[in-house]
Image (cartoon, rainbow, N blue to C red):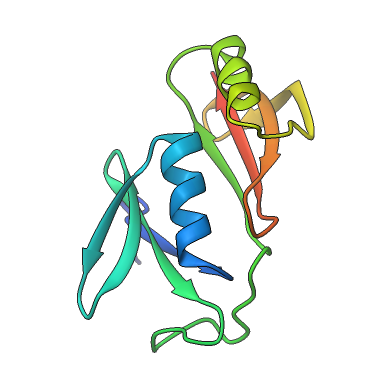
Length: 126
C-alpha cells in the first residue's frame, strides 16, 4: 500500500503566463520561480504551482489540459476581514462569502474569487 505524505505541486494550464503570475503574486502574495527550460512556477509555503501555457504544455500532461477548470482552496494566515479589504484594494470581486464550509481539518470560513482564467479560488481560515 502507498502512504501519501503531502501534496508537493500541481499544474495549472493558463491562457497567459504574465497575467497569471501578476495575479497570484499581487493578490495572493505568491513567489515566482523559473526552473528547467525557462518554465515558470508559483510558490508558497512548501508547495508550488507549475504553470503550463495553454497549447504549449509540457509532457507528460493531463489528457485534456484546460484553463479555468480548477477549484482550489487555500488556507490563509490572518483574518477574512483583512483578506476582504486586500481583495477590494486589489480590484478582485468576491463571488461568495464569507460563508461556513468544511475543510480537511474541520470547519472553516471562506470567500470565493476567480483568477484571470476563471479558476475558482477559495480563501479560508480555520
